[in-house]
Length: 463
Ligand SMILES: Cc1cc2nc3c(=O)[nH]c(=O)nc-3n(C[C@H](O)[C@H](O)[C@H](O)COP(=O)(O)OP(=O)(O)OC[C@H]3O[C@@H](n4cnc5c(N)ncnc54)[C@H](O)[C@@H]3O)c2cc1C
Image (cartoon, rainbow, N blue to C red):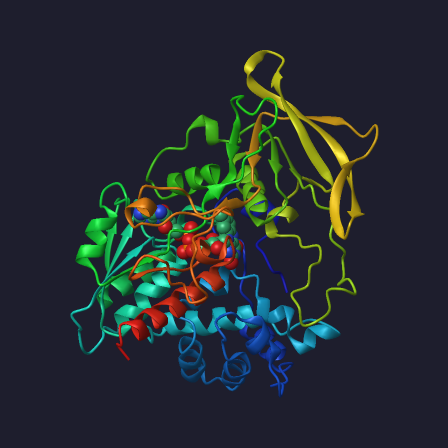
């Protein structure tokens, strides 16, 4: 089965690259689900605790309505995870021990899209409204999940979002070729019809104060993400042409949405691109750069190349830490591991623009039980570049006026000091998603949003 549209075709557009399987193929694959006595996919893999064997069995029997209601009983937005989840469930599937895991994410896609296509997904406003008002700060997957959950219980929810439209990194981070934005619009429209109020272009802490939020709402949930970008403070960092990956990706997403024009600075057309950071954000930059017409793309990672198969210390059913290649990697370019970046140097004909990077190879040496990178002698090399994208992750929650306004401060690790239930030291203030657990995954953000909504309702004695 072809997983993706052909490279020659997809490289010229930003439409979704993934091809979801034919029903015959899916039917044959579903027969491999063993309905295990202990379903590790459900209990150990999926943060939402999706009842995967039951969903699979219903889909195999063609009982799509029942598969859908089982899926929706634990997962509010399967259409997001069906597109972008790394499928932690598949990593712990028993079939995956000796062969291919059951393709649970494709099943999820088939079930939820069958639901939408057959108008089984309709707005379901709560039957009763309570006089409890809740504010949610941030409309990424965590904020949306908390809003959905509280609204379903009849609470009155207002989501404040500083960006122009709801979605967080779903909308302004993940490229359209992985997640088409119509899918977010469809869900936001449903939430609005169900009664959730979205106030976009409102930065909490600047446009509205912490005191306003605490006076007006019985509780406040911070779902503002972990967006403090990790920088690379080396010589030449101030040269033009070096940008954070999320600024670059968001500029492209905004341009596609017609929100703004793509500036030359954020266009890779004709440029030699270097992406520093070997993770998913880096791979999203590669795919975006190719579509913009880059001359070349190279991704650098300081960590060693992962093994092709599980290492003994990474046994099943743990998530396999193995070499992965995304659709963007398939599109071309170079990937280099165990490389440290020492310096950015200027272009020969323009002393304010970047002309390349000076790097060295590193070896990972065990020092007192911890692996540390040690430069390899005589391994220094240079790579020419016109555009450099820093995709090295995030260090924690962004500092903003909102936190002191609510009587909160970040701890030394850049995190908010919450308890295991997401309660913060300020009365009636909670935190969820990346802001609570650090940069993670869409599925974890959704699960955490639902969890914190539950805790909040218990605290307010709403059950
Ligand atoms: C480029 C990229 C690609 C990714 N790809 C994947 C993937 O393929 N699969 C996957 O599972 N995960 C992926 N992730 C990770 C995933 O997107 C995040 O883990 C997830 O979005 C976190 O959700 P969240 O709701 O906690 O925060 P966010 O999505 O970061 O949303 C936080 C929201 O809060 C808003 N906000 C912040 N402060 C304020 C304020 N003061 N007032 C009002 N609003 C505010 C922000 O504007 C934002 O909309 C990716 C991340 C990036 C950056």
